[in-house]
Length: 390
Image (cartoon, rainbow, N blue to C red; front, side):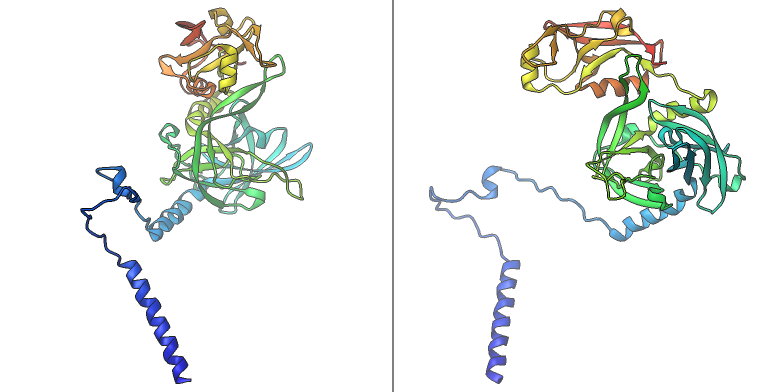
């Protein structure tokens, strides 16, 4: 038995020695003799190699930031229960001022017969919808409550967001009030269909949406997307889903969308004052993505831009002389001969969403926008007086 113990001790000692040698390996000095069969080292690829180090986060500090953020902003986030002709619905919202205005999604309150607003304190009251915007999917509810129930949240500057930035969603998923989830900004400048239809039956496009992987589920709609400063940088609107659960609820795939706070800053004051918001209208249909095959079929060599497939008859773009496609190409359903918009007021347009984001954030009906287009290989500037979607 003693012999077995001694053998085990020897084996363990050898393992420890080898482990220590692995950890403390030193860099050997350069040899003056090199062979042609030598395997290149890291230094062989660069005379001055650089090492990018990522600081290790202080987890205790991160936890303190998140817990402090939650206790600070949660009093301003409400659960919304809606009664419609089809039944009951759930959503989220947040207080925007001391006058009792609450921001949520239009689709949360659509078709409402009555609205109940539940505060984190436990206080409950009925609310009244005073303004809706089908394009951004925003709505404003007015409640009459005591001042101590109102904890307005601060709107941040969504134009300062960066992909990879940490964001937090707080809301009422599946009726679980005050639920907090954490993720990052996955992408910026996304588009979704508006809930407003054109005269032809198609839908307008909602622009400048934030894509996030912060967990958003049914009931989160209308709740805030926040940065680490506790500022609202977006209003949670929708998720990309690949199916449904056994109960019929949408499955979260890690792709959620929020309305950028700078859109909220433009729209909500108008909803409070007038009950609606008037968007600028250009009157074009664009193909969002052009791959190389499509570019060859259209005879386009410029990389990027918003290709104009169709121009609405009598619309602002049509009156200004913007051209849509008119001739058949080798690709079924793709018409050639349209203008390629490459800039708006001097700002580069790489995809159609760039143009839309610029429009909704900077322009109003009646404003003039200068579009730089490529037509038959020639670049030209065309001034367009914007109309109204309504």
